[in-house]
Image 1 (cartoon, rainbow, N blue to C red):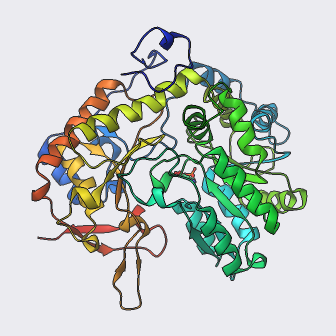
Image 2 (spheres, helix red, strand yellow):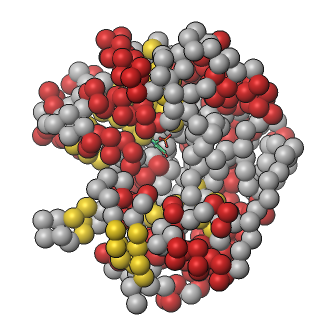
Image 3 (cartoon, protein in one colour):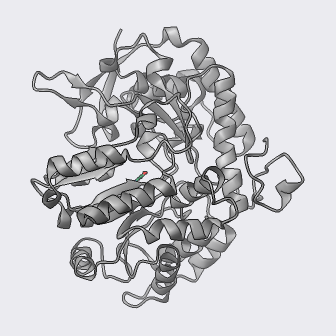
Amino acid sequence: MRTILINCTKIIRFMRTIIEPFRIKSVEPLHFTTPQQRKTALEKAYYNTFLLHADDVLIDLLTDSGTSAMSSEQWAAIMRGDESYAGSSSFFKFEEAVRDITGMPYIIPTHQGRASEKILFSIVGGAGKVFLSNTFFDTTRANIEFSGAKAVDLVCEEGKHPLISAPFKGNIDLVALERAIEEHGVGNIPLVMLTITNNSGGGQPVSMENIRATRAICDRYGLPLYIDACRFAENSYFIKIREEGYRNIPVKEIAQEIFSYADGCTMSAKKDAFANIGGFLAMKDLPLALKCRNLLVITEGFPTYGGLAGRDLEAIAVGLHEILEEDYLAYRIRSIEYLTEKLAAADVPVMQPAGGHAVYLDAATFLPHIPLAQYPGQALVTALYLEGGIRSVEIGSLMFGKYDAAGELIPAALELVRLAIPRRVYTQSHIDYVAEVIIEVFKKKQELKGLKIIHETELLRHFTARLAPIE
Ligand SMILES: Cc1ncc(COP(=O)(O)O)c(C=O)c1O
């Protein structure tokens, strides 16, 4: 792989190739299938890759969440897990690791990110309330809407154009933010939230300047600012390599600066903590923290384990340390960029610039002959599986579409297909294979047909929806 913008690490000062900064101690086999087996598996899964058996998938890029390879240090820490019901030493290691990075005094462990969201929005949400963000992730939006409140996305203009390159396409539109505060009324807005990086908007980062400016607006109106911190380390690294003035600042200090502007955060440790399960809610506000802890006790567990085993808390504590290693982050960001470049060189419409954890294909441009109401993103997802056993996910109208009063689809803002790269799992040859499959599908894109939904649920329908091809 070619070197990226910055040589912040020891080895790459001399070499152009960025290598995986780990060696492999334990392996698991991949499952190869024939085209006929994939066709049958897809039919049985109703053209929804969430419903496939993982054994029928060759390269699983459904998500980077909980799918990381843990390090030998994490496995060693797991053996040290203290499973005491109350006051576990593993909790205190976890708490120290979270506090060191976030500076938040009140830290509440949860079994994953959405559990933090559920607790937070059950308390601050409710009918008549409005929450503002660059872009809410699907579970965050669902938790807000489930409370009866409204979730409003205000991503900047560049963030709405997948093929236009800009350094911080995850930024919130500051003018739109002020306008929305005025329009909905300060009293109805419990908090503003920045998702870093912006997963639903292409894994694009938010700049420190934008975070600081959001803080200033929140201060003017007396509003709390929360961070959806799932990918805080990747976002911090982007700030280091793309934002003026941060090149020589350690990534950890950049992360600490980000959190210094926030009143609280929700976190899925399944992303930038290399854990297979876990999350937390952290905040500065004691009365709110006490309410959250009360809800934690009746939903997740005692405050010093909150839905996790002691061993999970240990794995997170180590993972939070490892994620900030700059050799790792240089490799991580470069490997996503590498796949993006390969696809762009073959004219595949791919989100520019590369995001932090995934490559996003612009399905609307890839398949212009499939109407949005026939879910071009999902059609592409199924084609990638049939062609090469690759599992990806649609982030478009299947995930975010709504219906108007006449039952017509109100499409999502973007029709994306996300190929999320699990951390430390696949090697460069796997990634080369992925590029080859996508390019093959691109060559026969005219043959692809749309899909219709034959069964769906009210919330988060993409997880369980059943679809059928339109002949
Ligand atoms: C930005 C963002 N927020 C929240 C979540 C929810 O986290 P979890 O899957 O741990 O519930 C995710 C998961 O993908 C995410 O990407």
